[in-house]
Length: 90
Image 1: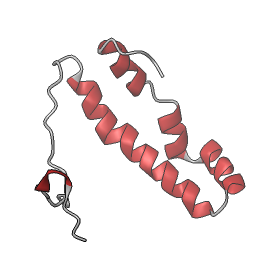
Image 2: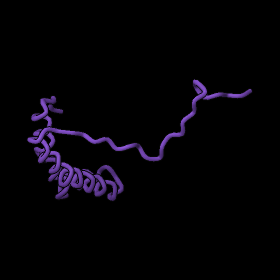
Image 3: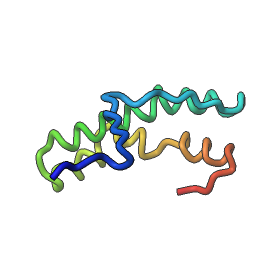
Image 4: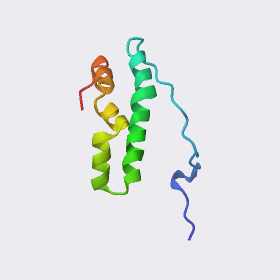
């Protein structure tokens, strides 16, 4: 028995997805830049610090004391961007 891909057109999945260029209004751009340069790296560092503890109990202590965790948790940048784009808050 031979199995053919749907429609007979098999396309391999690319290893990397193509990047998309997102155009935002000029007033929003500084907030997007701030989020990409401060909020996102802080969030990544916070998650890495939590993982490094090895347990959920220890991770909760890190989330309450780690500077990166506190920085991203208290950031108003995502809410400001959602407000400027008339998106609902989370």
